[in-house]
Length: 128
Image 1 (cartoon, rainbow, N blue to C red):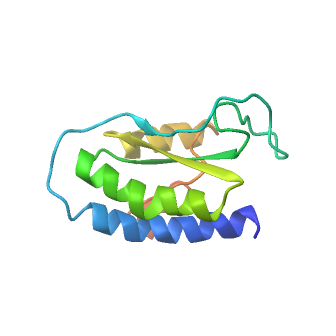
Image 2: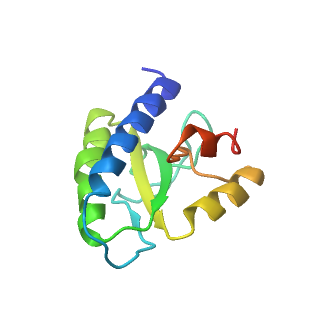
């Protein structure tokens, strides 16, 4: 499966997971990344740095701040399942309270995450 197809599937799954995660109660915001690969240096075929991902191709996604329960749900229903189904990749999610502002700035500088998750197509148009 090509990376674009994987990212399309992941984006659809992230949207569904976002709905599930949003059903939890409110709680403390977090700015920690969900990762867990062995440290290994090198680069993937596409030039991405694979350091810290056990030689896997890293994929990053930024998501809204959420409480521990919501993060655990996203970890279980999206991140863990994606990583198990695609062993050549390592998906990590960074939770940011200011994700919309951060995303706009990062994408303008060509420094954004690999996966851009947005809550509606009209909001995503400004990124496109």
